[in-house]
Length: 585
Image 1 (spheres, helix red, strand yellow):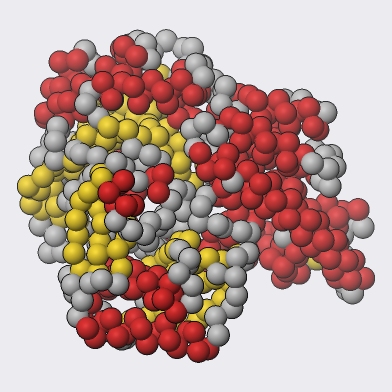
Image 2: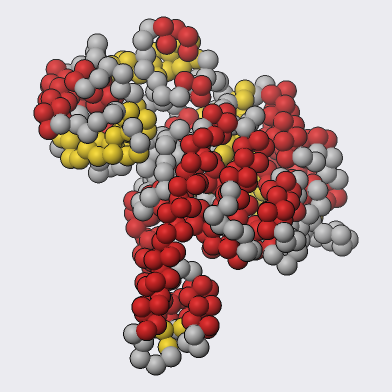
């Protein structure tokens, strides 16, 4: 089964059950500081799962582009990917367990033709606060899943986004991925049972005092990974041997003149990392390789792909990366328009970073020679090994290889310890910086959200009427706003923009919200970023007579709630795009 078929089969099935297909959100979240990238299908739907009305209605389905980089070091095995696609269907206060479970079962058994004997499920076993999910157990039994194939757990079958907020039980579906006979009793710890789908039932709300109450409106959130399910349906235990990856792996075999067998790790890393880089570069947020945030991840991915291309003796100065990127653009362009539209941006981004890294590599080799010539003895210590990694992007394997040629040992254990400490620090910093999710959209963030609209309007008045938002990022500490502009703002321009925003705040302008068709909104002069991703019915926020924008919200009721607006910094973000960082005092 081709992966394209799986996406189409899924969407067609849920549309036949009254769902509306919604477009995939960008991989770089808009106004969501909780993560660097959209990490799950449900993430862009958080405001609607929290009660905001969705313009498409109460039954939704999609395939969503996702990026997860928390297990970057595990890429290279047969099952991990940094970029992946999630299939999802949602009920926003509409249907609940019966329909969700029945349709999941129907899709698996009648559309994908999976035999019932090869399926097993887990359900919530209950705890002091929430009873056992007997309704789910009975539904599965009625559909033909035997009791010994239904496992009950507490930890793995309860979902909550943070410490408090919407929560509930979930039910996971497993497939027997093995040629051995299917055991009568389902053991979730047995790796031959592979999870392929999860239905989450958001039924309760957990409060700060630890109590749990029932939600007035219950939601269903489901998710199924395209890569994993495709591999399962094609009988592959290595995801990279499935039809999704075949064209890319074959191309890498051709470029390197080496077989996949025996070179799996490097080929998987190149295939995975170039695919993810293509989607980050194609995103309309305009991310470029850099040393911070999304740009840092992008840089790491491209550089890691280059290092593994070298391992396969690929001439890294050739157009190998462009050939792989072009193949990916052909494969995904019909599903994600921006991949086709931003093709040139993608190819240039890869090429520029490759040139830069090759220079860094040369500098690193010179630094290595210098370090070796100054060594006392034949041991390269952990600090020097880490410096080569941190400053010049040398993986420890490369340092060890080079040292070996000169008869020098490397303190690999010490390096690993130092690397681990570095990772923990980064992770802690990242969690601090991007904590949030369902708990996001606090009062402060709501204020900043409204302030971005005022800033956008002020820039049009003071600097250029053709200025438009190119991206934004909001945290509880500050707002960041990217906009198209061909020059660095003068001190006078910055002051005038700041003054105008504060003038509008003082005026106490009302913020109103209306729903209308996309065509009406555009005709009325409403500003919007990436019009194609909006549904036919849109939400328009108007601030007095100074701003009118298509937006998902949330916003304050009146500008007088905002406090004093102050621009802290104005800088270049990328070619033709400037960035303002500002605070509300």
